[in-house]
Image (cartoon, rainbow, N blue to C red; front, side):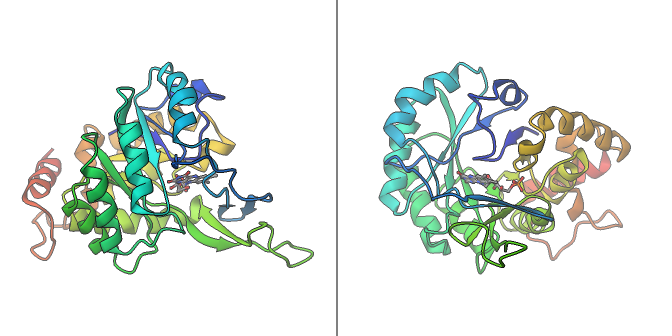
Length: 305
Ligand SMILES: Cc1cc2nc3c(=O)[nH]c(=O)nc-3n(C[C@H](O)[C@H](O)[C@H](O)COP(=O)(O)O)c2cc1C
């Protein structure tokens, strides 16, 4: 089990100590050209989390590779680069450029940007096109707001993805208490934090059954218990996002809380808890489940252990 940050939720260069607590640092999404992002106000709070409409602000791939990547590499933490765009070619350009760099361990394809149509065919098309230009591990980051998440995940797998990142934000709206006008300049934004937790659990649970891919689970993780639940649903790794804004040291705390949660639940380690939520109460395997044989074996081993 690796503990990562969720893309866009930690500036590793201004908070290097927080980044060093991670097993890998995931960058904010990089696009071919620089993007200033949306006009302020871009962040709003709700009782259930936060809303952001940053708009993929980033320096663009040339400046990222020339100015940011060498400094990020000095952190001594494996680097995952989040790749974004608005057309298949955008992803291909960034993946080819960034994927050629030795400093980069893996690429996460942000396929859940509101401006990219996330139908399964399109996800498969992007993953296949990127697969053709890089040998780096590819994680497809999906939104829970697709018509058929299982089909989308299978399309990513068939196209050559090495893993899934689940989930991205969901569109939400916050109104000003007094004026009843939207707080964000763009009105709607991506909802993250506690409200996403049950949605993320369901997404991970579904994709664990539908594919053989390892899953980075994220969405409202703020404690070791939250991490354990995502792992039980089927996550191989866990990412922390919104919680880092209020607690930059959250990763270290969550890691130690998770150890205590695992011990209390009788697991030797996190890997033994992967998919525990899929085991029927009587210990037999559910014949209706679409688990791969390797996952089934893994689960049997877990339950035995
Ligand atoms: C301020 C902010 C910026 C984000 N930027 C990105 C981004 O650039 N690329 C991306 O794939 N996800 C981005 N996300 C989504 C997160 O990576 C994550 O999927 C989501 O917030 C759910 O996790 P959380 O509830 O722990 O925050 C952003 C989220 C927030 C709150």
